[in-house]
Image (tube, rainbow, N blue to C red; front, side, top):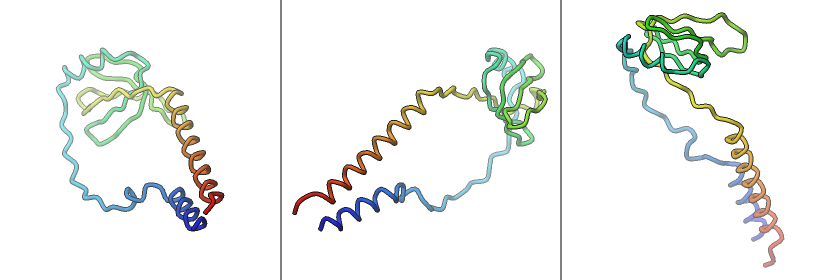
Amino acid sequence: MRRMIAVMLCAALFMPACATGGAARAESAPAPPSTADPALMASYVEQLPVGSRVRVHTTDGRKLSATLMKADDRAIVVQARTRIPEPPITVPLEQVVSVQLEANNGPGRAIAIGAAAGAGAALGVFLVLLAIFAGD
């Protein structure tokens, strides 16, 4: 009995997220990009602080994860965040579909994830030891 419980607990620990595994998803056709009003987009990007991390979607389908360097009423200048340094990119506002400000996830999130993983592992080991050494 103890071995069966130990095997079931070990199997439960090593097979997480079975329900999210291989479910087929129906993909819908992407909507054609629509250009935003350049004046409205200009007023939005001019309010963003220089140095903020943004995600820029353009009419030609490009998605840029970048740092905002300059914004005016005609174009934005961004520095792409890549492994190999690239020169700044100037994107005219007529080509911008959307600009999203990315959240700054600091070290607190990583610490919380590590603590939760450690607590889960410790609980799993405790349950396996409890199953092995529990008296009949």
